[in-house]
Length: 161
Length: 300
Image (cartoon, rainbow over all chains, first blue to last red; front, side, top):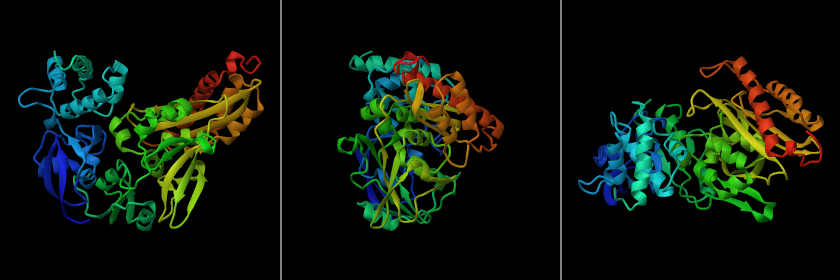
């Protein structure tokens, strides 16, 4: 394929974008579609700041060729909140004080969503293992783990706090 | 590190036959999960003119036990590390492999990356390679109009160099049923949990009357390729099991590696750590195989 108009399904909405094979998913999301919640960190798969969910699973948008994500379901951080109401995971991060500079937070929240969708009642060890690919360089991991535990409890109670 | 990739042609063949016609291992590269290839393209270590995605080829994403093939485990080229790690067949039948994958800590890497892709990188620091060496795995390689099947030990030729030739693709890794009564252990030493191994070790052992009846020891990151410590295995098959035997085997294993000094460790430190990890892995695996419980009718 060369240049083509492709459809990306982001947060349940279709976007038609002109893509070329060498374009990375992060650039399509941020520059072509304008969803800048997905952060560009290391560009090498070390930090997890660019994490998005591809068919519900956490992937590095900086190492994903955009063409391989055509017509597949993508979730970015913009897809979690319901209007002005934060998603319970986002609210739990706010309430736990799990956000410092905030740059890693979109990736942390999305990886947490993938974890809790798969395992609604994770142990502390399981939380740490699942989030190991997301680095916080403010190094505030304790409150992040607490936020995930709290979000898990809230979601198990049907989202009520 | 470059933000943008250089332009290339993109192909999405629907079959292995079409794919092998396209890939040549140099200017035309196969893409599975992309964690290694896309990173190397950003670093300009790889500048392919064509990227051949395998993702649209049906029937390559399996992790299954073949009841007719002696209970061997078959892992397709598109099966992700996460899929293998989570497979009930693997955690029950080949826990050593799940243990090795668990030592790769990044979830995203395991969700995107495939087990076959990990091998095809050809790095001596692969975590799955020592486990597959210890489990006696074989690698199926499809070419134009034919297919060959080699031992995983013959797959690695040098750093970044594998037995895959131009117009060939690895389609499957096959792990035979575990020897009866065997137990394994994977141990890894790294600078931080998310760094690659300074040294990694996988062992698989089974006992009969206080002596190893089966012993395989594989070591990564300590030679140009992952290696088997054959002299150490032979020693274990010869001598009665005891702590001194584990120590002697560990010393023999350290003589079968050729480590280098780099940013992660000196060669001397790596050789010392081979001894420690092999001794500990053997001791823990022996425990798992029940040698100390007198299951084999003799005091250990």
